[in-house]
Structure formats: structure tokens, C-alpha cells
Image (cartoon, rainbow, N blue to C red):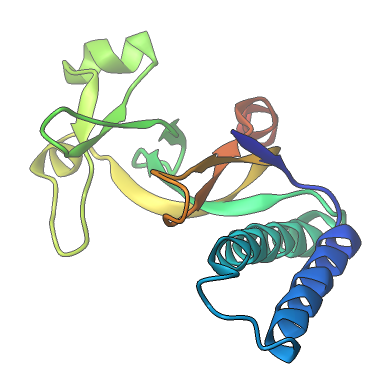
Length: 171
């Protein structure tokens, strides 16, 4: 399921409405069990709108426009040129970088590079002159959302807009 990223004004209005809903339920002294689903929904919506505002403000600082930007991990080479934006989770629950440039795959002899978790060092990254860093990147104007079940924690994830990134990072 995807949730659109609109404008700061729209998301702030939605946050205000969510706060008003909560205040109304508190004023009416509703039993927690009577409004559990409403509270869950409002909390999920607040998370969504707060994150959208954060990304839009980040884009406003970077570009001067309300364009969503997010701080993402990237894999770069020794010249600080982005090598990969894509990671996957393996069946063993570890994360690896996916190299899509055939010339680079041929030169280093592998398509997958281990992700460096906090406190760890990747010998493979070091050997091939690669490193992970964070970079502010344009993202698509929506979030991908996931929730295991109604009442569960709702997670929102931005999606890197690779077309815009390629234009920005092109030599």
C-alpha cells in the first residue's frame, strides 16, 4: 500500500485534525477499548504525516522546493562516486548491496557486497575500495507502508527516485 507525499500545509492540517480527534475522545472520556482502533489509526496517520513533513522540509532546505528528500545509505567507491543504492535482505536475514554495473561486477568479481552494520567492518568493501555513507537523495512522492495486522505497528518507507538521482549524480 502506498501513501502520497503532498505538501507541508496539507500534512500539517491533517496532523491538526488528528490532534483534534484525540482531544475529542479524551473530552468525551471514551473508554480505551471503545476507541482502540481509532487511536491506532490516528497514531499511524500521525507517523505518516510527521515523516512526510520531515522529508518535504529536507527537500525545501536542499532544493528550495517542497520536494521530498530522505537521508539514505549509499555505497560509494574511492572517488566518492555512487556505486549502488540498492540493498536486499537475504534468506539468512542479512543485508547486502546489489551491484548492477556489469563492468564493476567483472572488475571486483562479485555482484553482492556485504552491508556494514554499526560496529562492523566489511573486509570485502575495504578490499575493493568501497565504503558506505549516508546521502540526502530525492525520493518518490509516496511512502510504501507495511503493517502485519490491524492494530500492529505501521511502518512507512520512502522509495529512492533513481531517475532523479541519476540526473543529480551524472558526471
